[in-house]
Picture 1 (cartoon, rainbow, N blue to C red):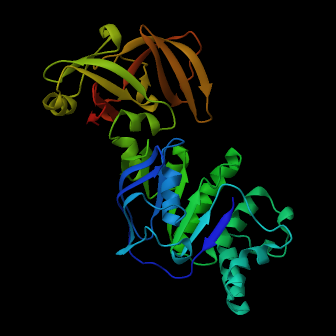
Picture 2 (picture 1 turned 30 degrees about the vertical axis):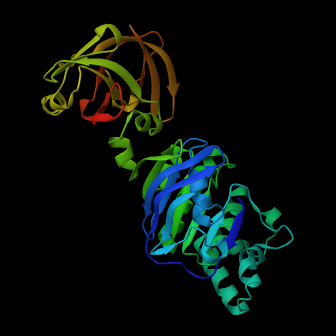
Picture 3 (picture 1 turned 135 degrees about the vertical axis):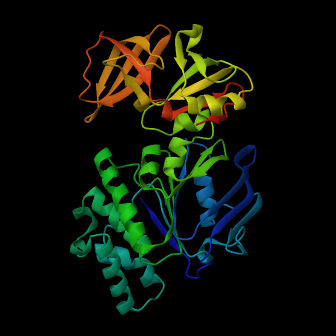
Amino acid sequence: MAVNSVGTSAPTKSGIRFNNVDKNFETFHAVRSLNLEINEGELLVLLGPSGCGKTTTLNMLAGLEQPTSGQLLFGDRVMNKVPPDERDIAMVFQSIALYPHLNVRENIGFALKTQRVSKETIHQRVAEVSKTLEIDQFLERKIHQLSGGQRQRVAIAKALVRRPSLFLLDEPFSSLDAELRRQMRGEIVRIHQSVETTMVFVTHDQEEAMAIADRIAVMNAGQLVQLGPPLDLYQAPRNKWIARFIGSHPINILEARVTENGSQAFLMPNDHWPVTFPDHIARNLGPKLKRPEVNVGIRPEHLIIGGGAPSPLGEVAGEVFTRQILGTEILYEIKTGDGLLRAVVPTSQLHEIGEQVRIGVDWTNIFFFDRDTEETILS
């Protein structure tokens, strides 16, 4: 995770805005008509698959790339052509770039030293940031004497010691193992709460984004698809693509034919699964239907593997096809007459491969998507 610290003059203490920003690289349209406001002091995550434009967006914030059209504003100041050293930012990249011949204290304070900041101020700031990151006991160590997680903290400290107005992080934990990634996510949240600096964090990992963000900006093919707090994206996806992209386990997408009043439906091909919707779904769904055929999205955690009395709302029979024990949960694939359904349940519900089961649905947590546009009709 390399650190690039630039700039000394703060551009603003108010928000950052992308106003209809495009970025082209010859024939490649990397960012398209981006309208995005970043609030002062928030931790915003840019999330999306590889090539979606999130790193290009971050580079425009840093001044490493200029918008092809539109405006990037820090407060009321247009920043399109403002060089990086006038933006008061610090940037953390994927690979670690620390000076091996310097100890931790010298690495953290190096940028301040090159700016001819007084020794007393350097000592004070290094002490403050190293204590915040809990690396103050390592200040006299050389870099090779540190663990991977400790090096990550030193790299972040090296950026934060300048007290930037904007802190940019581009996939900073991609080279870490799973356990250390989880640990560093907690560190980023704690650091953000301590320093109250605006942070923009780029990742392709939706679990990472959900864990740390105040808000998430989901991008795909250069466009901003949805913006909001993590739970909003999970509970109210704007379209089928978002519903598939957000969530720990792939969502079940079923074909459905809904009756005219929205009270009943036949799920899966060949009307294999007849269901009766609760009243609140029927009231809201009926007026929004353009045609009877829709797609229904059901997250695995909202499927119910039946036991006891059958559900009056409708169930489908199935056979346990695969089982993955995930610690506190079990992920099942259930073979039905027309395909596979994924269900996540507590480990107390242990079923054997080949066992016959009934599948029901928690109807308070389902999505309906327009078959043609893939936009959400009801969530």
